[in-house]
Length: 390
Image (tube, rainbow, N blue to C red):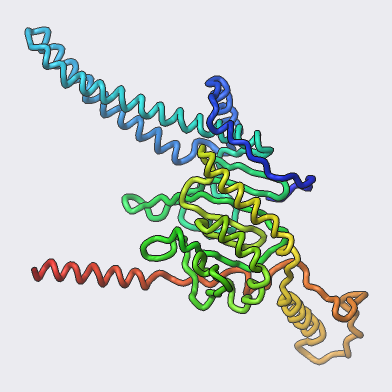
């Protein structure tokens, strides 16, 4: 996804489409349009819903029809009317379940319609869903059945995507569905892989992120920043992180994103939350819009960052190519004078690496969570022996 070259415009915020009445005909037309625009057939989740609903309906039909026939036959032979009570109860369950399923389906369709109108009112675009979104963030490469939904995208002053995301780990009865809300912001240049693990949303046993990182990559920043975030940066990139996270930028993160986990990877910045980011709640949108608006005003400084290690990488590559070109497996005539690789050279002190990140800075080194597994296993074994001995 690329950022269109348009004149920068300030982010606007109009929450009225999230709550104002909707036209049922417009909702149906919107649902038909979304089905027509779908790039794939019925998704796996929809298939599961259809199968489950059909199975429940079949079971109720198998129970309801014979029961009604038997009870009505008993009444016609002089049975008491109270025998109809089980029939009425079963009928109420069937009708109530059907109505609950219908209202749940309809409310989801109305919610998508409202969010699409909210996007249009705020000069943004709407996409109903994408399978396996091609984003480099840590949550997008885990598990299976990956799906982004209710995507709201802004294109000015830079590309921003608000969405809900889910993936599944395990299989069968041991499967777990993980749900996230996220904001993806396109940056001007690739940056080192940096993670800000918000302390305010951590779980009982530490981070709620789907990955953990080696402790050697932790970097302590000045002030009270460490009271809100644990910052991880690749080894050797400490000074680069200090350049990117100046005191004014740290203040922006503390004031606006203290409950959000942050990841910078390639030329993207991601904000993660365990609640829906694309929602009907105007307060959530106001919070996320304010956070993005506060942060992107500081990204011009990040656009000037360059990785000096790229010059060393290019120098090693050039040396290897020249060595291979001037050496041979057997003696022979003297090689012709080498042609310079470039017809010009930059003035001394003016050589600047291009935008990019050297190999060692592109991804953080991850660590396993075996320590917590061992602790839980020891606790479980101890509890078992205590129960056994008592």
